[in-house]
Image 1 (spheres, rainbow over the protein chains, first blue to last red):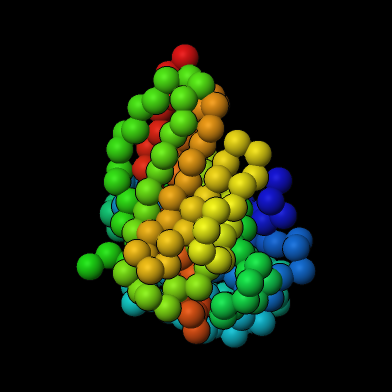
Image 2 (image 1 turned 135 degrees about the vertical axis):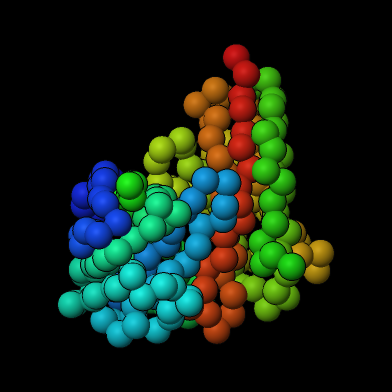
Length: 116
Length: 111
């Protein structure tokens, strides 16, 4: 248990569906992240939020829409996805953004997404 | 050039041996370095972090950092079958928002 909880753990959705991934962190951290992990590829940073403000958006298609209502919760809204979007989506948190000794990323268990 | 590079493996070692995992990075201003372990179907879990040149030991794990040569390594002593996993190297770049991850090295420890 890392203190970062993701739901659902598994999701199958059609290309016309709208669904959301939810993440909650119980660590008192100020920064939250969405990463995508596809087979045999490095972790891809999608979005970074610091104190509920988006500070990084790595050229992610608009069919992925993040939402951070407070520093403990992060959502990833999904709509009109493509089969190639099937992957493991990982939420993570850290104390802060920016370099600080000891600033470490902790991951949730991930949400396996399959787009059919 | 990739920010963080790792040999994808698989690296196979016999039980009880030392496993050596290597990682190179491209950004000279990188400040902090991490090793994560990821079991199949699971999320990455932090094993060690290292910030200064030299060695850092934690149980059977030793992280080694050489900023001049831009590499970081992880040694696993007395390897166990339960150590079989993919090991991810991550680098936190100065002035950041970015933790860059390597593709990972798959380690197989054979009984």
